Amino acid sequence: MPRKVITFGEVMMRMSAPRNERFTQARHLDVIYGGAECNVAVALSHFGVDAAFVSAFPDNDLGQAAINYIRQYGVDTSRVIRRGSRLGLNFLEPGASVRSSKVIYDRAGSSFSELSPGDIDWASALNGADWFHFTGISPAVSESARAVCAEAVCAAKDAGLTVSCDLNYRSALWSPGEAREAMRPLMANVDMLIGGLEDADLCLDVRVEKARSRDGMGHEACEEAIAGLVEQFGFSRVGLTLRRGKFADSNDVSACYMDGSGFRRGCVMELRGMVDRVGGGDAFAAGIIYGNLLGWDGQRTVDFAVASGGVAHTFHGDFGLASAAEVEQAIGGGGRMLR
Image (tube, rainbow, N blue to C red):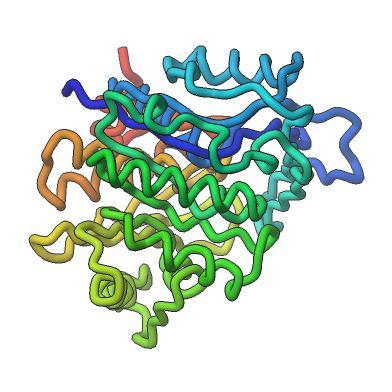
């Protein structure tokens, strides 16, 4: 599988309260690094895919620490540019039981947010690649980052790459109206769309009226949303995730997928005692991309993607750190001792 994937986005220093403490309790914070598009690159690298990450980091010790952290997982960071003076921050208060997790962003003025069109040589950055991936977080960070994202998507499409987008709506960054204004024009150059069911409405104004499916997961509503997305935007492939659960550490996840041969409903994974919810959707996106790179049929692709997202909930931090074999094993039921 000699294929190369390029992802583009921001990495932040993540500082988490330990032991499920509240921010008001914590007297120290655990430090790691992550960001949606980088998370996809790391997961793909663990599947054996040649993955590279494009971004902007400050030319200081914190920027270098972030690069070192990413590079240890086999991701090519040679396309990262060094500029600006600030690495974005996010603070995570992990939830427990009926208490939801909470995230506070501190990313204004980051190196990535200050990117401008022309700062990145996209012809060079995309050279030799087959696939380009971005998310709706990047254009939400700042107006200038939005312009760079549009520049990147156009360059990738002109270069003949397959372009995928994970909508990843973030209410802390913009309103649905702002998201729709920015995201809808970008869709003209997107081949494969990924996201949560609600993202279709919040980012692209594709509403779903149908009630939830009998199984409680919402597959029917998901299929309706996919049909609306394909009708409006002409995507060749769409994967939407589903989640149910009343507790912060106990959810069921699934998905629907359409690749031109019809709808496929992914397996339902019961996640109990989740270690870290952050990054599950990014691992799902990596699974969808991986299945397409290998030319799998729709059912195998969506089942693998659901399992990839599910297994990612078992690791501390943003990154999905499972091999393809470990994801395949989880489809059949994990939890066994491997000897």
